[in-house]
Image (cartoon, rainbow, N blue to C red; front, side, top):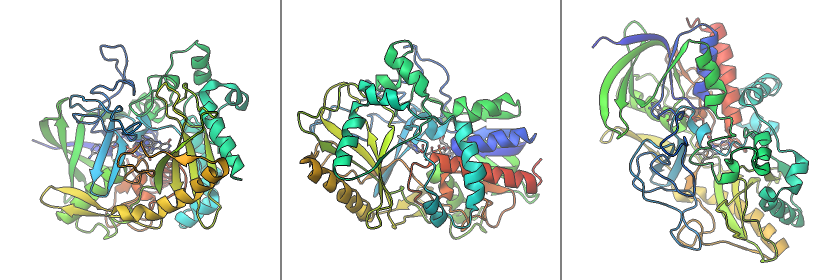
Length: 502
Ligand code: FDA
């Protein structure tokens, strides 16, 4: 079978991939995007594209027989998860020995399932994490561009103060204040105008109908509505779905050749083909990109890749936890799924924590305050290629989460003391308070400036680029997609100006 040839290939259609596709197309380069998930653009027989969190079906998760939601139990009961039939659903949980990583699958990647929190990192911390990146250009050009392109907006403060849908947030804010802690509004890509219309009964409910981790049917400006819509609009971009890149090699003429497995909705491989390209942009996410490069290096296909490929991974210090409130402090049966506020104690030198106030949108009064804490954890994991399974295995032990647990505990012990409240033990299994076995923010594995140059060009190989979360060295102190988007914009501007991609 002769290899099909395209000028540029982008692997993955999350933040990095969407930026790369649009900017290549605008520069006139015909681009093929290969995405292992499906397109989420057509309703099923129930009239909806995505299933609801309350009654998940096969659309919810990636090839599982039972859902595996982050909040696994309530009052220690297995009431959250449901049996489903295997299908290329939108949310995946990739289980490594010491850490499970949640990722989105489909055209739009993580933007389909995430909470939409769109946070530009603290400048001093950004400089510390990525010292080789010009902070003036990031904060003057690339962060503002990313915010504009992603459609970032903020909840209207007067509506926030009055709506029942954010009572859970106001309760947590008051309790943080009693402990002397500052809170701050968190911007989002969910359209708050739409949310207000949902509350008023003039728009179909999505964030106000418990939709988020298995997709929002309305309201969210996911990448398929922003960058990817613009990319397709140029006429220069093709997106092929259910197409998983398995291997990368290089031909003597310098072009890259990808082995692509085409699957059907049962997961069976229906065809394997080769695609050749002049320029290759890897945007398969921290886990996906790192695995592709590690496999290429370790099998000898791309032997000159940096020894740093596979190193510098962490989950942004993610820790979830819940607190139990007093009966006179209800958090509300009605909760928006979209978080809008965080407790900002990042400048606490001993225990820096940025803790988002998360909803528990099950339609009942629970008296629970839930949080996603982002902590500063110096521990890093390493991916190792396992030839027996042809997969990358993450070397990360549960004990490496201990600094994160300690930081979260330090902050929420203060909140509990100030409010005479206690933790919840029933939410994450095993009577644990702190969920330290999963993360939403996988970062690193192919770190900027060590596995690549300062712009994401893979060391050792011309025309091979990394443009996703694998560039960020394990921690960024806030939710990462604005940073990933801004860094991808910076890379694309540079390589399209300098590298002669046609
Ligand atoms: P991303 O993971 O978005 O995209 C990679 C794509 O590549 C996927 O579509 C995948 O299917 C595809 N792919 C992988 N391997 C492939 C292969 N071999 N061949 C073909 N395709 C392949 N962040 C934030 O800033 N604010 C928030 O509120 C949240 N909330 C949140 C909630 C939940 C539930 C999750 C799971 C995640 C978040 N995040 C978040 C994290 C955020 O979604 C994440 O950081 C970004 O999506 C990462 O962007 P990337 O471009 O790196 O990859």
